[in-house]
Image (tube, rainbow, N blue to C red; front, side, top):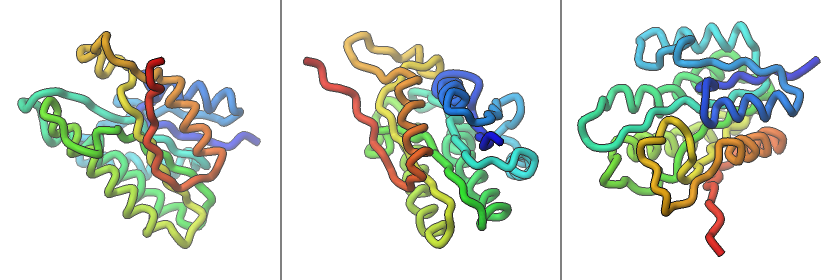
Length: 200
């Protein structure tokens, strides 16, 4: 019987690549998209619990995220999706599956290490995710639940297509997905800062 993987933010970009990678690794994959769950709604936590009960995953990967530049975008949306999604998943796992073997991988960003003037809310939300990952280590240290955080650098996805700089290198979504599968297969509980290869 195949192990079940639940991928949040699985409609495109990194999430779709993760779904493909897990399918190739013989997981039974369920993708949850923004059409299935709106992280900005008060019902988000209850919806997460319903999904966890229904799917009973062995692996959870959260690729849900929003990216905006400048100062005039919605703080609530940025934190609800980038931070709140991980918060609700951790709470649901703690409530339902504390005695289960499970891997949960959060997708963060290298921006957690320092805010950038062009997108301060995004950087702040990813710094909050890093601190949440640290707290999860303490919360689950006596269990078989492993929580990892993968922080890619620039990644070529539709979410940030308007901000591409042809002079810079980018990760491809399938490269990030392979790193996530490695973490899952290692049953790891680590924070990994994924580096771009330096130009020759």
